[in-house]
Image (cartoon, rainbow, N blue to C red; front, side, top):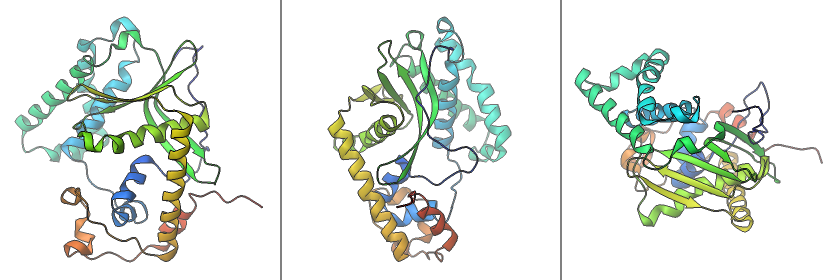
Length: 290
């Protein structure tokens, strides 16, 4: 980032990490309140998978691709970043090696990562771009006191000051039936930016595997609707927390759920609800003096 560029303002507080609602957790609650509770209230952390590790590695490479001057942002340079960034990930979490049965399996996985990084250049030309934000954390508090948080992969700003939000995806592009659900993330990010800087002119999901790009140009009424949807969703979460019951909900993703052993719908036993976790969750809504 040059000295004349300014990233959108982030309203996060320094020091203590305050609870906030993210877009991924909002979507998780919509699919299954119990799964949301086990992750957010109980604090269950799931181990990495090959898919999530690949996503983390590709995101890291594309973030740091923009560390160098525009003429150097080539596929050749990007692929040289893969090995050192993978080594950093392993240094931080050596258990990632357990994802692979042998060196050949890891090599094949790394080939797939190379393919994803190279495919990025068929979607965009990074030599023509100058982001003002990468892995940008943005926190806002809505008018009704709900703290929202997001980490945006990349934010571009045009000479006229218009913002563009970019989110990289290493998984499959959604079928037409689920496009609107995918764009909920972009509306959420537009809501964050409207609260911290200005409404972005364009938001895009870049699906690297297929080269597909989903674009949403948000308008104020669209984001007003998103804000109301998020507020209603938080009211539901708050009601569940107060009642002490987050109901399981069957959905098409149950087969991929990694906390199924704690779900009564599949013969699992749900642990006792942790009071401290509920107390922390309820701090997501900021209480202001009357």
